[in-house]
Amino acid sequence: MKERLVFIVGPTAIGKTEISVELARLINGEIISCDSMQVYKGMDIGTSKPAKTLLAEVPHHMIDIIEPSEEFSVAQFRRLAARAIEDIIAKGRVPLAVGGSGLYVKVLIDGICEAPSTDRGLRARLKQEADEFGAEILYKRLEEIDKESASRIHPNDLRRILRALEVYEKAKAPISQLKNATSGLSGEYDIRMFGLNMERPALYKKIEERVDLMFKEGLTDEARGLMRQRPSLTASQALGYKEVFAFLRGEYDIEEAKRLVKRDTRRYAKRQLTWFRRDKRIEWIMLDEDFDTGETAKEIWKKLS
Image (cartoon, rainbow, N blue to C red):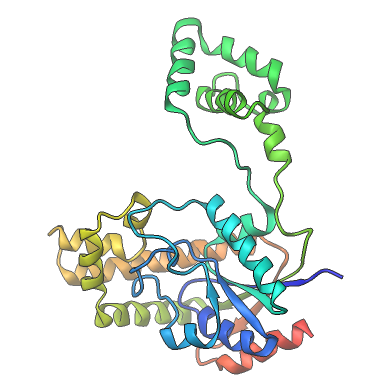
């Protein structure tokens, strides 16, 4: 019998954190954050990390694991989260993956193609070869070593041709083979996925209230401290921080920063819902604006029983 792995997904600000903590208590679970920005230390207010009281009550994983100056990839996330799941199960507890970063959720369940990283020297050599002899020479080479990829790549799509040849030279295997070997957790665990949603006006109201609270709690000061640490490209583009960084650089006033954070967060929530709606494995739960956290957790618990 497969061990159970539970997911709670949905748009930002909807209440995933509070519901997941209540559910974790009911199912003897530990929480794995599937949030691409909560991995960074010191980015607390802008990423809405769980309160320290909640972190103390229920063990959380994949939070505060790297410095803001470091880059963090989805492949790293998959490896570390998969290891955390194994550790949780070894303790006789239930792993509960929670978050709104759709790509992180997908690669954890369905896997990812871990192709070699870009080799600028090799890429430049191949590009020079294309400039001298034409892209068709490289395309014919690709047909010889990886017919499957060649059939999907247009002969004039030099960027993808270069990448496929680069992967072959570094990995000593066709990129199509690496993609076909992609493995996730879907075959290893009994996976149940629950999505949280609510009427759009109510969700947008919660988003605006959360953003107001972020600024009240000190988002500006947190962003100012983060700037001094020279955040990585990924961290510097985090929702909420990039808008405040622009304010701190004098590009607009604080009210405009608040307006932009609210606008961009609404747009992000819409993209999240679009992403998750494509996954037919998700069981959706519609929440009222004044939903009860404990009752919602019990509803999910009953579905799991």
